[in-house]
Amino acid sequence: MKHMTAPDRGSRPRVTLRRRAGVLLRLPAGLLLVSWQYFWRITALHRSETPGDAGDLPAPLPPEVVDERTKPISEGVGPMFHRRFRVRIVDARMSARALIATVAADLNRAAPWTVAVFVKTRGREGELRVGDEYRVQMPGPWDGPVRVIGRDSTSFTLGTLQGHLEAGQIRFGVRDVDGALEFEAEAWARAGDRLADLLYSRLRVAKEIQFNMWVHFCLNAAAFSGGRPSGGVVIETRGIPGELCRDTGGR
Image (cartoon, rainbow, N blue to C red; front, side, top):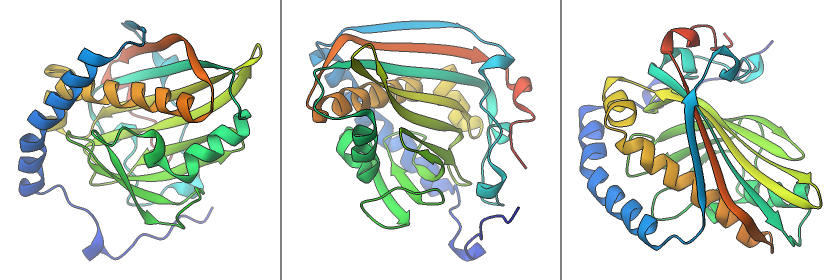
């Protein structure tokens, strides 16, 4: 299949020493915001963390969205974490299709502005299509480019690109369950390099910032659906050894 055209090499993002230093300088502010939000959160959180296996790996990347800028899980460092953030929404005034379309039209509407800002770098504003690209600006090691690698009527998936300090993908989806909506963010992620591995899987600092971001993303989606979360947010984390991630590139 025809692969996507990469931009000029001069415009490709690079993980420079200056950017690495910026990441570390921004971490204290990010941690302060995370701690503040933890303190004031009243929604119940149901967390579990268990060992995973090869069944936790994501599907191979679609060939049509893979090019030299793609950063698949196989290029990451350390263990992979398969995480699912799920909230049940009752009394929603939107259908599953309408809710995912609303989220896709403006990712910043659901993202907590204190932790992340999505800047669109390819594609039209107000819509989300396969091949569109964003730069996610965060106070942690995920500040970097992503590409839309999947889209259907009730879900969309983002994949990391070169220059991102994480390697992986995340899928957002909505479905009807017993008269309510279920909004879910499902992520497959490894640290993009050894610095990110230290902050993510060793010190667990960046991992908690990511945790906070996707919990709030789910709750914000519930809020603008017109409904309310029921039963809190369920967070499931499964870790698998990095050696199982060798054949997930899709190239």
